[in-house]
Length: 435
Image (cartoon, rainbow, N blue to C red; front, side, top):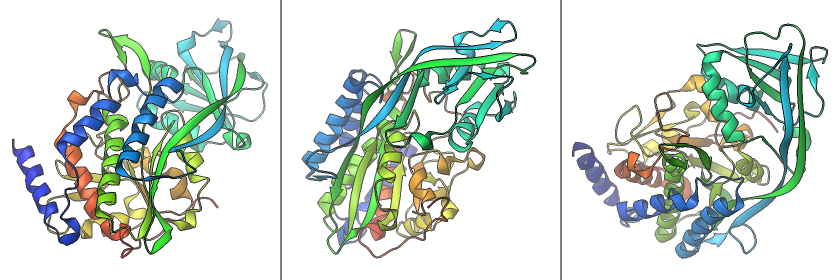
């Protein structure tokens, strides 16, 4: 009851912040409708690799954009389509000495064109100890290490490796035309040592595959060539082995909650009708299997024209800072968070620096490419990732979320970003990691 009271008090405060803020920002009814649709069993977990399932989610988001009155970002269709080369494993094996490993004891990420043996040159070996965070180390190796790598994981991490095996589903995805940027293969093995002989083999069948973001635009009035991107990812991990009869990983928090926020912000800013800068609303595909949607989008927009990117991911529960709070990844890399906090002066809501700095979240979500290009692109979240037992499981259901937490987060972002939207505030740029 106390949490609900605080949320309602805060909502009332926001609705009275000047003439520009008289319109209601969102409602629990709308939030619940969108959230329950995206996280329903009918969506079957929104896997980016199942065109029927992800297409159903894309059509729903596109219908929301059309109802709001937005224009497609590209052409006459809200889908921003792109081709990938999808490599499906037909055969693979890892043999250590005279022992052939079981399929769930190893994972090969990337294209392995030639076998790796003890005689293969330039192969880096990395260990993941029992004390390490497997998810963190996995992402570091896959996203940041350019080398051909064999990763030896302690047997404690066998369940995690098996889970990642289910998510990756023996697939290798490369955006068409970016094959050289895909990098070398990474091989994860549950083993202590690579003693003696070893052989790692894989064959694949590759085909073209269509993926699509869902993107809309609200043209700016006086600064149409200055863009503010408000984003989320709408895919999840699809169907998993059944737990108590349930096999659908609905992804209510991850990231139906962020997608709901993006849609409601689009509705609000369209009604407000005072955006001097152009706002691009985009739901990215394939975040869960390599951030391919955001990579395609970010590599096909002029980053110098992007004033800010507000990426929203997993806002369905209280953050570690309590109710009425969000944390921002890479908080100190620009002053976007501070500017937005200024616009919430007098309210109970606070933006905080990311408390999980050792996990490098700033470059682990869909804001990453634009951030690396110098854009003040940050992810806004409440996820307590160090203790969320429902993350990437069939238990990530709407019933586990707090609708009022989502509502207060949407209201805070809507009000906090108003100076960025109306052109009166310019956030500082992030230091570039790439050109």
